[in-house]
Length: 102
Image 1 (tube, rainbow, N blue to C red):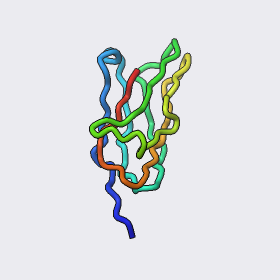
Image 2: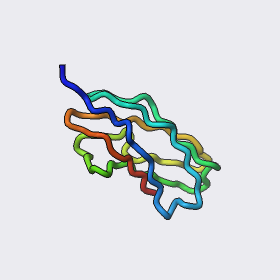
Image 3: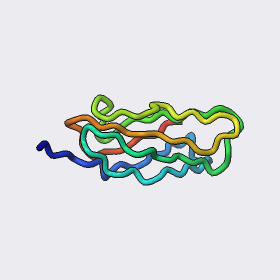
Image 4: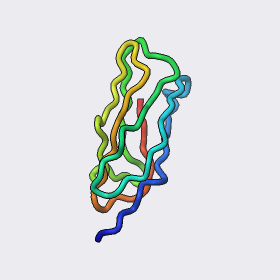
């Protein structure tokens, strides 16, 4: 049986553009290789009144070909405050960071 490397060290990085907006993200669970996570909640401190997009990617190490996000971009529309995304891993992925870009 193939051994997997859980993504236990994933962390959220918020860029300067979002510094004034508090974004709360559920803890990201360990995810076995070739599996999909349970839905992970992203919550804004207050609802948005303009469309806002958060693009998800990997960093340290970059492994966008081994870890995918669904959806790859989280879209908050007028009045939205909570959205969810999933992470799917592929053989060869390693622990790293999830990058949130607004």
